Image 1 (spheres, one colour):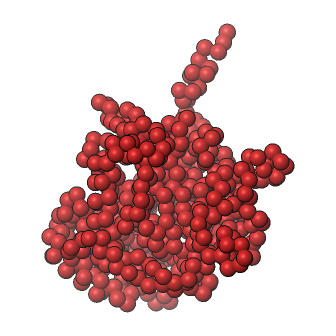
Image 2: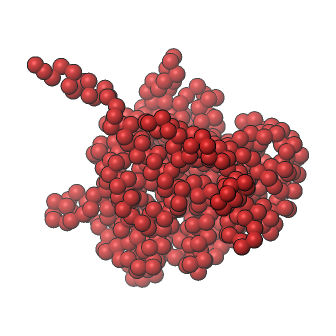
Image 3: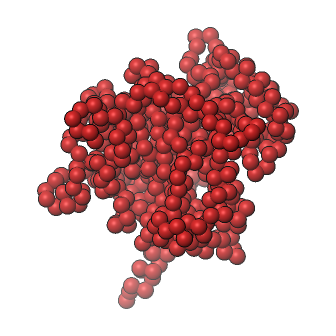
Length: 499
């Protein structure tokens, strides 16, 4: 990835970034792509605290100037420019300055549904005219934070880096005459090819667009909720996986418009069937090299960085002892770190009020207990294959950049403190508890998980400075709005309970 967010004694973070070695050549390569592909307009996008894609659109004629000078947008856009229940803008007031968004040239890619338009991901900085830290890294930029945190992790652990893949479940819902959901587009039959086939026009369009934007799609199936699909893409370097999950969501939203459906990433729209998770499969590596995967695109509809994958090297999670399933020492330390901080991590992976419907609706394999095991879906972590483990306390609403940053901090703590996760649990966790095993439970509400996050300095460090302030403000307000709301359940339960 181009650029560095390291501070300089002379230059601001922003100036260091735009003058980084090799960036000028990448800017020229993007201009060549613009001309080759006939691009007229560019979305300059970054990701808000909740994972929403925000930014600005600018004609491609202004690429060079924007690549150097960036664009400006209010600081509060990092919190969706939403107001809290007291009518205050979350994170930043109207008197705050405007951020500067600087594009990462290697993420430039044409939109396959309108080939006149392209997108590029950006990193956010403080305004150049700020009195304090002008041009400094904007700490409420979750994508920029991940770049910094991952670079620090690599430096402190002799080149160790996170590669991960995710399993993005979501639901395709029918749209009623009023534009609101009218049930799933298919029946809730897990792995049924007939139900998968019913959504074939939809998922084939998703796959077509995904391959055109650098996602190497590897497998998919119909899951066990109405209209629920899981379409997976190849794992990679942490930042690119986060960018690709964000891109995947953008693609699904577009395909939904084309088919007059709703692409639903809400975690639990229906009780009594499975929710939508987003399990993360994690491993730490050393070495490796970039390999271009053109995905049958000719010409390549974007920069090589968008279509490259980090391959090879040493997977430090692979078993190195007699027990062929048991991760090596680094992997065990990382599992120990995650178990140690699972309560606070839940505030990031299960980030909405609705997320906890998934944990309360028992019998659907949602993780509730802080333990680990081999292929054991009753635990918060499972070793899903030699060389990786699956983090399960994460759902479809996750902000992937915050999640990756928080997991890196848990790994860092586990390695530095040599944390031992204990022996893997091979029993059903509920049977083990009946037999007397003491197991910690995950937080069971957004409010409780935010309390666990507030008390955990390790995971809080994944949300540095303004990032934690904005996230905590946004999510506590979300929880308080829920508590201050009269729901259908209230009226159904209490309306005629007396006399």
